[in-house]
Length: 124
Image 1 (cartoon, rainbow, N blue to C red):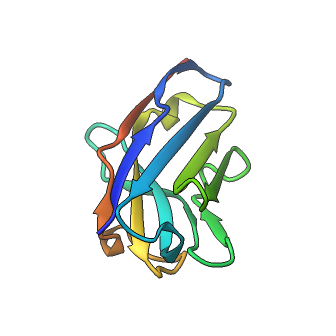
Image 2: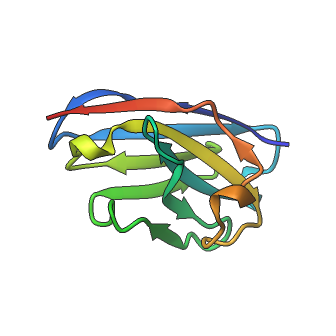
């Protein structure tokens, strides 16, 4: 079992930056592949970025490549999402998720643990 709590969302102007954090507890954090997903009103939850449990391999959605960076600090049991050059279309609720020994190609339905989400609103 792992519990996830996101923070760092807020209102930002287009072109600005935010850093989201997701703090994990309850299990061995380094054993979990961590993903970030987002969901805008009326849309399905979509993949944003992922970092593997071992080795630190990453993968990104095409829409955020070159703008977002995922990282993890296993000593702090935390995964981060640095978001730069934000656009209005990045507006969504952002969720972190965990999958035990997961692949970076895991789909949204393969993650067993989810946080409550943090809202990101980008004004144009």
